[in-house]
Figure (cartoon, rainbow, N blue to C red):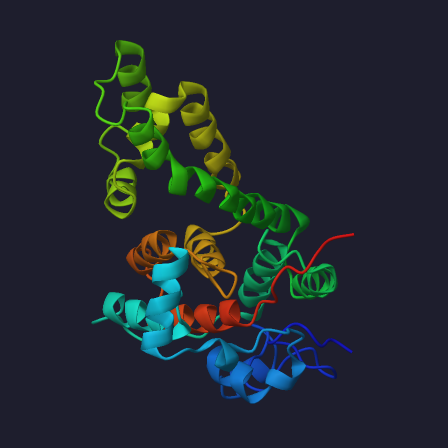
Length: 283
């Protein structure tokens, strides 16, 4: 019995309303959004995360944030950001089951979950619904990049502490900047979400700067997973209960919308992310 993949049910392998593309049922059965299905079938979700218990009133939350210096980001805030980005965006179709399986595989494989049983079940489900090993590896390469968020959170702080945050780039550094960043609109949007990060990282370590671009490029080289799906997976990994990284969430949300992803798939992806289990240890 599959119990930890929210879009699958024990008998048919699919929750009602989510049907495999090309099947006879897919031409006649109504399709319901995954977020509705997940809510209705939450008993199938193997997670110890109770989102309701995580809600605090504004006063308590504000005091906690002031005390710890850490933001407490509710699911409702993600929904609000999504709604703002989705103004004027058509609903569009629901996620295909294979795409949902790849998203769930990415979520359960991410460093903030690393849930072995859920990974095994997501892997089996993705293969069963037509995903290839190359696509699954590409998803793992993509979500493994969550580690760079440590760089994103510390680079500007470290550069300021070292007194080099505003130092002019050397000719060698400028050449690296021009080669990897230049006037690419993607990195312009990246800079808006994480102002100063790329420059600080370059000033701190040109080796790290080059390695960042090389590593982040890996899942985009083979192209076995569509760009819009990769953006949804990346967005999902920045929206989990254990890792709500708003700069990345906003960036990948905007990229997904720009690539033509509709409202339904965005909200379904957020619903999947909300159900991913927290990492509780690896033996």
